[in-house]
Image (tube, rainbow, N blue to C red; front, side):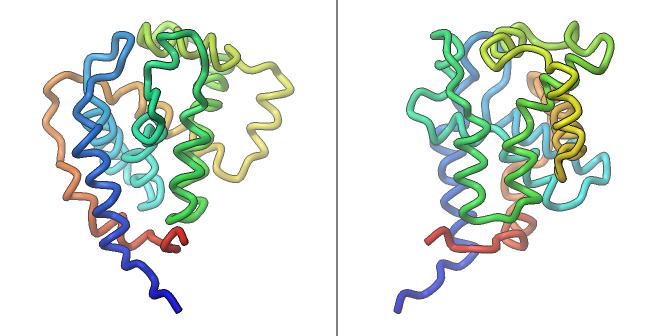
Length: 192
C-alpha cells in the first residue's frame, strides 16, 4: 500500500515549478514574468476578499503555460495551446473545483467580458488581443448564456479582471511562500 503524499510535498512541487520556469517573461509582449503575474493576480484576489480557493486559482491560473513544453510560445506561433485546460487538469489532480474550475474558465471569461462589458476589449494587452483571436474571439449570445449557467463562472470573471490587472512591472506583492499554507489547506488529493 502506498502512502498519501503530504500537502507540503505537493505544494513544494508547484513552488519548484514556479521557481524553475516562472521567472521567464511571457512571450509576445507581456511585461512581467509568469511568477510575477500569478503573484499579482493572487494579491488582487486577496485585496478583494476572495475565498481561499479563488485566491489559489488566481495565483495558479496560468500554470498550464509552465507545464506545457511550448509554454506561451504557442500564441506567438499562431495556435491556441489551451493552457487553461492543461492547467486545470493538472490542478484538479490535487485541488477541488473551487481552484481548478476558475482556472479552466479564465479564457472563456475573457471572451465573455469582451462580448458583455463595453470597453473591456480596449483594455486588453496586445498579447491578450492576439490570444483572444486564437481562442475564438468574443462569445456569442448562446455562449454567454451557457457560461452564465456554470457553477464557477462568476469566480472566473473575477479572476479574469485580476488577470488583466496583474501586469505591472516591479509591483511589490507577497511572494509565493505567502500562499503556502493556503495552498496546503486546499489540497484534496495526492494526484495518484
